[in-house]
Image (cartoon, rainbow, N blue to C red; front, side):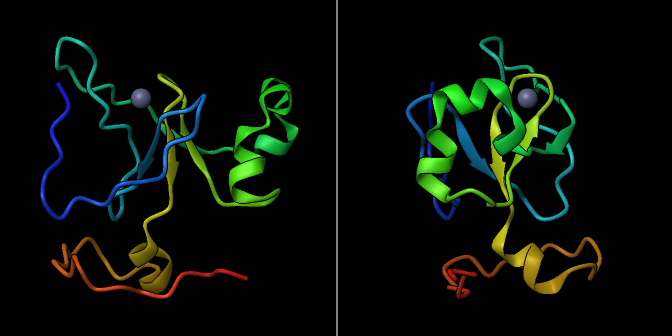
Length: 109
Ligand SMILES: [Zn+2]
C-alpha cells in the first residue's frame, strides 16, 4: 500500500532503483517491507561510478550525472538523495524545521 503524505518530499524514481530523499539527520533506512517492518539498514554514501553492477545498468549516471551525492541502504538497496536542507545547514543539530513548501535553490551546477 502506497500512501503519499501531504508535504512529503518525493524523489524522481529511476527505472531500476527505488529512490527516496533522506530526512534531516537520517542515517538508517526507513523503508518498510511487505509486513510493514522497518528495514533499518545503514545508509552509506554510494559511489556508483565504481560499482560494477551499476555500470551495466547506468541509470543513476544518466539521471544525475557522474558525481552526484547518493546514499544507498546497505540492506534493501534503496537509494537516498541528500536532503536539501541538510546540505544548507550542515551540523545545526537535530531540530525538526517544518519549512516544507519552502524552496531552497539546489546546487545545480
Ligand atoms: Zn533499507
